[in-house]
Image (cartoon, rainbow, N blue to C red):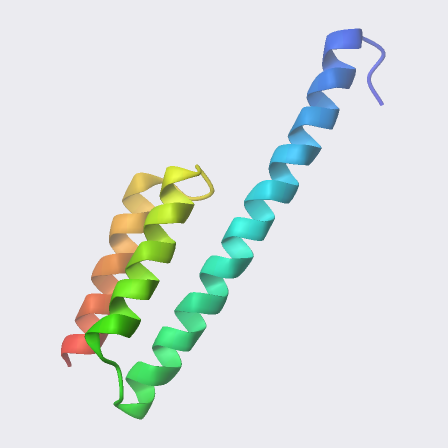
Length: 83
């Protein structure tokens, strides 16, 4: 535990941010698993892909993942769906 007051505050703030990001990343992973399952079953429609893309964009907007990671994940999903 730090001794400096500002660093004590940063520890608390970092823990809050970590919890918020963890929640967003967890919901993103759940959506991606659903999409991958539907793509694997061959029943992926545009609604499913749109929902996954939206979840990825939300995670990027909230800062849980970077913009480049979001674009990469969307491209991977689109590539799998088109095959």
